[in-house]
Image 1: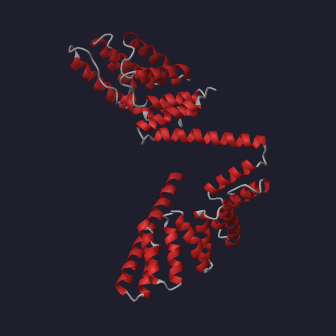
Image 2: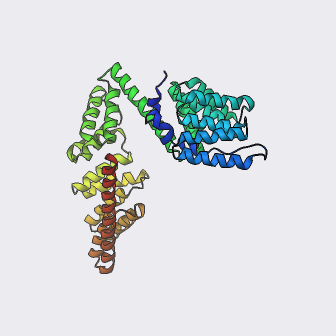
Image 3: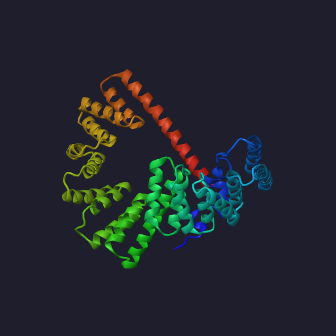
Length: 393
C-alpha cells in the first residue's frame, strides 16, 4: 500500500520541507566542497549569499547566485548539488532529481546526494526509488545523519512496517534523543494496536480477549468504572482467568469502592498468596479501616516482595503509630522520605511522632519541611495545569 505523503508528515507538503527538521539541512547544513583553488573565494561568497537568500525564503534570489556560481565553476558538483537542494525546497522534485543524477553520474557517492535524491523521490511518492537511494546513502562512507529516519518513513509508506521499525530502532541507538524517531515509533505501534483491536472486534465483539484488552486501555486512561465493567465481562467469559480479580480490585480501589476492592483482592490472593502488590493493596485497605494488626500481616508479605515503595513504609509507619510503637513508626517514615525525598506527607507524619516524643525542635523542623514541600508540589501542579491549558489552545 502506498501511503499519500500527507499521512507520513504531520503538515501539508508545501510546508514540510520548511518546517520539518530536514529544512535546516536543506538550507543551512550542506558542507561546502569545491575542488581546486581557482575561483574558490568567489564561489564561497556566492554560496554564502545564496544561503542567506534561502534562509530568508528568497529562492529566486538564491537561484540567481547559483547561476553566477555555475559561470564561475562550470559543471562543479557542489553547485549542481545545491541547485538540486534549492529546487527540492521549492518542491520542484523532477528538476532536483535531474541535477542530483548529474552529480551521481560523475561521482556515485558524492556526499549526501543519494540522501537528497531519496528525499525528492519521497516527495513524488516514489517510495521504491526513495528506498534505493537512501540505502545507497547508508552504504557510503559519510551518510547523512537523517538518512536512516527517512528510510524508515519510506519503508513505512511502502507497508514494510517491520523494516521501518527496525530502522527507527537503529536510529535511536545512534541518537537516543531523536524525538522524531520516537514519534514515528509511537504512531506505528498505536496504528498496529488499533488494527489489532478492530480485528478482535471482527472475530468476536464479545470475546474474553477484547474485554480484557479494553479493560487495560480504560485503566491506562484512568477510566476506572469502564475498566471494571470490561474486566468483569472478561471474567464472565473466562471465570478461571488469572489476574482479572486483581485488575478489578485496582479499578474499584481507584474509585474508593473499598468493599468491592477488598473482595476482589482477596480472590486474587487465592491465585497467588505471595503477590506483593495484592498484599500491599489489602494492607492499604486495612489501614483505612483501622484494622492495623491485619494490615501488618499483609504489609510484611509485601515487603518480602522487594517492593521499595514509599507507600509500604508509610502504611507500616501508620500501623506502628497506632500501636504506640513510636520508634518503629519513626523508622518507617524516615525510610519513606529516603525513597521519595519530594513527598510532603511523610514529614507531617514524622512530625506527629516527634510531638508524641516531646521533641519540639524535631517537630518544628519536620512541619517546616512539610509546608515547604507542599508549597513546591502545589506550584508544580499549577504549572502543569497551566502548560496543559496552553497546549490545548
